[in-house]
Image (cartoon, rainbow, N blue to C red; front, side, top):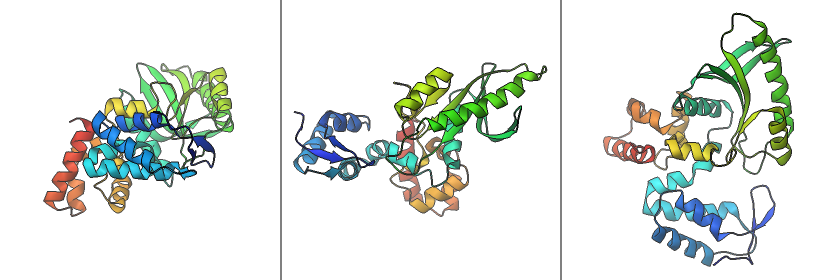
Length: 280
């Protein structure tokens, strides 16, 4: 039964009607079964009060999942984990690059490209099937902030400058296909409208529908290292500083845990969590 009388406070400060359906859907995406999800939904519903924040609801659900199985909690915290790639945007750029690598692209991060007017540092330069895309990443370190229309406007002008120089060189056999804008939050309606009109590819938490960041990560098992509930904040920062941005990367390079002097029993727990996350 939907609980309609409770108003919650979103991260942006806006008020919204609490939705049991949304809570249940987010819990099911963690991999938890219907019985556990119903138990958590019932407990959270019983503890609701007017003006409760989405952060408090999330924390309660997260802690209940973690008590049951850490991998459920890890998947549930995906959105928060991407925010934890900050405070700078560079780990997010590395994360986007790594996701594309596993999707068949060859990528470079921070490539300097000449435009017709000036040089530009491109966040991610990617090739696939004879086509080239240049990708600009807009990372927000705090929840509640969306990507407004100024972002695709600015990025579109940079893309056009690079593209016009690229296409003026007769020896370039690779076609520059499209400019991308990738964000870890959401786009405003004006930003989406401009992206469509200007033929920019917009990728956000839930855009394109069914193929947004959350969908790609879940489908490919490409979880950021920050989803782990067993690694400490210090350990995660160390791994990010070594360009280990995906759980899958740590599975392949577990010697980083030896460098961190993680004990063998704890190391096995961490590796088991990662295997479950990556379906390995």
